[in-house]
View (cartoon, rainbow, N blue to C red):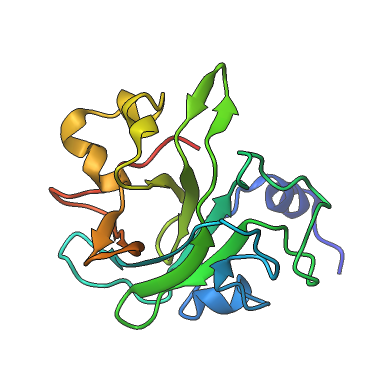
Length: 198
C-alpha cells in the first residue's frame, strides 16, 4: 500500500510506547528448566546451599510470575565465559532463571561461589540477581551475600551501602542447617531491598 509522503514520514519518525509482558511473563523467559546453579558434577568439598524467599510488593504481598535471573561465579571467583561450559542446552554454568509461584515464592540451589577480584578490590562471595516482572520497564539489579562471611566487612559494594540497609542484601540462616538460607526481594517500603544502577 502506498502512503502519501506526509503519512509515510510521520510513521517512520513517531516513537513507539514501551510495552510490558504479561500475564504469563515466565513463559517467554524460561524456555528450559533452570532451577538451580549446581552443575552435574560437583567437586569434593564444594558447598551446596538452598536459598528460599519471596518477591514482595510494597504492601507485603507476593508477586506472582516474576523472574529472578541469577549469575554465580565458580569457586575461583570466575564467571563462565561466553560459549564456555554449559548444561547441554547452551545455558552457561552459573546461570539460572527462577520464576516465582502464585504466592511470589522461589527456591533454588547453588554452589557457594568464591571471592571475586574486580575493579582493584576483592568482592565477598555473592550472587548477582536481576529481577524481571510485569510492570517494570527495566529490570532491577541486586546481590545476595552469604551470612557470617568475614569478607563482607570489606566488600567494596556492600560497604558502600548504608549500614542500616546492608541486611537487605545478606541472606539469613534458616534454622540450624547452615546450608539452608532465606532471602527475599522487597520492592518497596521500609524493608526495600537495595537495588543498583545497571
